[in-house]
Amino acid sequence: MNSLDGCVVQYKSELCKRLRRNRDKAEDLPFEFRALELALELICMSLDAQVKELEREIYPVLDELATSISTLNLERVRRLKGHLLALTQRVQKVRDEIEHLMNDDGDMAEMYLTEKKQRSEAYLLNDVSVRTDTSGGAREVSKSAPVSPVGAFSGAPFLQRAFSSIMSSSKHGSLMGSSDGENIEQLEMLLEAYFVVIDNTMSKLLSLKEYIDDTEDLINIKLGNVQNQLIQFQLLLTASTFVATVFASVTAVFGMNFADSIFDCPSTFNWVLVITGFTGGFLYVCFLVYLRHRKVFPG
Image 1 (cartoon, rainbow, N blue to C red):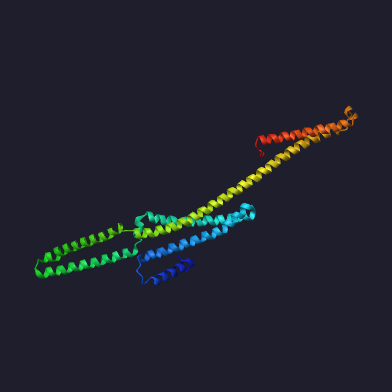
Image 2 (image 1 turned 90 degrees about the vertical axis):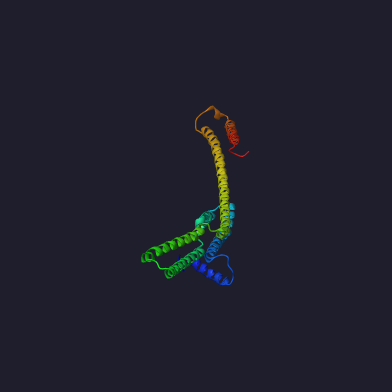
């Protein structure tokens, strides 16, 4: 951890302020839990502030993109979506870590640092007192009744040291065993409170992601509608080109320079134009009816 980082400096100053402010007050939480609570509070507040800022920035851009699809708006949404993904990963990481601690009672019991220190000090005091009592008892025995040199220097001290080690180990085992079954509700309640906060932040991010997905679906629908309109226009243009080509082909045939009896009557060419135009129009109408029957065009 970089001690010169702005977040660390803010955490240190806020922790010192709270410790000075609560110096004369009775605190239920030990020092390590107060430090942990402040860390979780600052992290949750920072992430929630970033989510709110992202919401204020991304909602107007999405609304503008829904009404006007442009390259600039698409680029802005792409950039904000990348920011959303990175922020979601950070929030998910914090959420997973808190959930992991809540699901492991052993890890929560190991976080009682003040209590572990008190148990260690109590164990050392008990060990010193047991050794003192043992040495005092040995001196009294030596004064009250004479014993053999072998028994005085080998048997009794050895038994006393063995008894002292057994007693100290049993006391140490009872003290250490109590930590395994320690009541961890205090830490569990603290973690649950901030788990609810970070889960609420995660819900905001998921709602924002769903809004982006809905906007993308709307844009895809609009683009699909425009593409369908272009396809319909292309079909109409193709049918018109076909009819015009048929009409031009007929008129081109009769415009050729060859001798025929049909050219003896000038009105005959007019009838050819009328019949060709009517046939072309009929083909065009049949083409439209066929496309509507196939539901290519709306009814």
